[in-house]
Structures are given as structure tokens and as C-alpha cells.
Image (cartoon, rainbow, N blue to C red; front, side, top):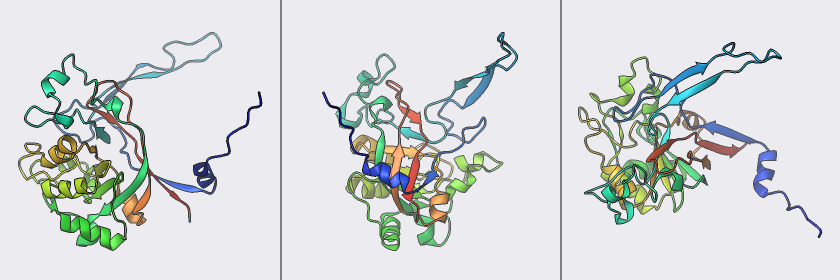
Length: 278
């Protein structure tokens, strides 16, 4: 039997032609800002070089990683949020979590993403970074689309930049979490704007994707309800979007794959935005 190799994929041709990659994930470090609702990131080294030395002189070190699945840049699976006891599709949340694993809507069901990505740069419209607690409205999102010439359509991944990401590495880690000040983002109306365009996923440079009111923290998350529970849209939080905005890259190939953790409500991710050079 003669075996004929498949011709090279056109995507490979694009890569050979040169591509620029923007890393949209945050560096994972002990003490980084995070929602108080989740276990923190911790990394230790139980085996160090020299603890065991082979006969040939070789040695190895290894690590122990402990963290919540919603810490750092991460994706929310559809099992993450319920409303009035129901998950996306109407599943009973209490029944679905029996055994401590979500077999149907866990993060292992989130397929790797290779999709058109659109950055919605709201500060470019406002002329400044969004103020603390600012609600990004449909009018703001429409204005970003008009300014950039990048309409959002079915199956896209829409990334909403507020400018809040500049605080992720601030020496005062509470600034990014923004409990006292509030955090900018979309709320119900902005989430409905995204849902109406049938996006596959949406992301933001903030701790909880959506607007947090001053002094309320995560007490109310209507955008999560609209997007996850009502429309099955995945959310990606704590993204690094400033480099895309700096280079005015508003449309790109979005690549992301969650860890296939069976039954988990989320996963750390390292999203990438890829554009052809020149």
C-alpha cells in the first residue's frame, strides 16, 4: 500500500511566513492578586539538586504545585456558576456536583480554542483607562467596534480591555482586587451585548471579568449569570491585554487550551494572540 503524505496545512504556511505571538497570560507567582473566594497559588520544591545524586553525578529538582483553578489567568467552565439552583442548560446544580466532580459541564469539556479574536479597547474610546467601578456599556462596546472596524460575530472570542490590568503587578496587591474602589467592567447590559453576538468566549483584564461595585466585591455577578448560565459562554479572567492595545492589534487568531481536569469548574490557561508579521 502506498502512503501519501498530506500536503502541509495552510496554517503552517502562515507560520513559516512569520508570526508574532502575544502572551495574554499572567506570570504565576506566590502572593499574586486573586479573588478571596479561591485557594491561593503555592509552589514548593520538595526535592532539590543535591538531595539525591546519581552515580554519574547527575541530580534533579522537582516541584509541588498547589492552587485553586480560578487563580491567575484562567477560564471558567460552565459548571462554575449557577442561578436559582440551575446550571447552563437547566441542569440541577446540586445533582450535578454529587461526588465532587461535574461530569457534564466540567472544564474537561471545554475544547481547545483556535478562533478569531477581537480586542475591544475601551480606554481608547474613553481617552483614559476606565475609572474604578466603571460600567462598560453597550455604547462603549459599539464605539470600540466603530473605532477599530472590528465587528464581533458568532464564534468569536471577545476580549474587553478596561486598562485595569496595569494594577496586577502593583506592590499593593489589593489594588487589583479592588474591593474598596470597585473594578471596571461590563454588567448585565454589556453581557447581553456580547451574548447577542453569539461569542464563544469572552475575556477581560480584571479579576472577575465584570464590573464590581465599590465595597461589594463579588457579592453580585450578573454578567456571569447572563453569559455562563443563560448562554453558555466561557469566561477568561485576569488577562494581560496591554501589549495588544499598545500595538493596536484588534483582530487576531486566538489560541487557548485548558488543562483537561476532569470535573473541575475552571483551569489555569495561557492564552495567545497570533498575528502575521507585517
